[in-house]
Image (cartoon, rainbow, N blue to C red; front, side):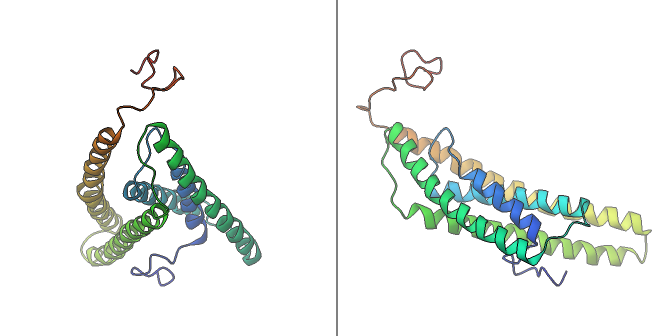
Length: 212
């Protein structure tokens, strides 16, 4: 518990942090529509949280696996280089996509904005999760005085999941869905009327496309 304090979300266990970073890279790959900086930050944060959860689960399943300090340093160096490449490629991909559908290109400020949003959202949810975990343990110890350990553990786990899921659905998911709808409306309004139709039938907007 002391290794990963509640209010220090930047302190991460090695393997869950590594899987979270891998999911971050996936979140930077192109999609059907270009993503504004704020939306990219939200997508990246959610991907990182999913990867972190998966990494934590794998760490628990394979608890005996350890990594040497030298291996960790080499891998961290590689990850830093790949992250820089992915950030640059993501920016270029976004520019290409915006050009293909005929909307204005973004400036270089796109990068620090989505990184800041992703870091803040990831940190906020991680702080909440660690706080709920600590609350669950405290509540479980309290229930142990009156209930069997298994029953108190189940009740504590249920309350923890309820709090995290309630926050995720009520705050994150609802706001992401609302912002996504606004984003698509903005993209539709920004499409230029004099933009030439795509020449490939696989693309929407081509006269021969089944999606037109």
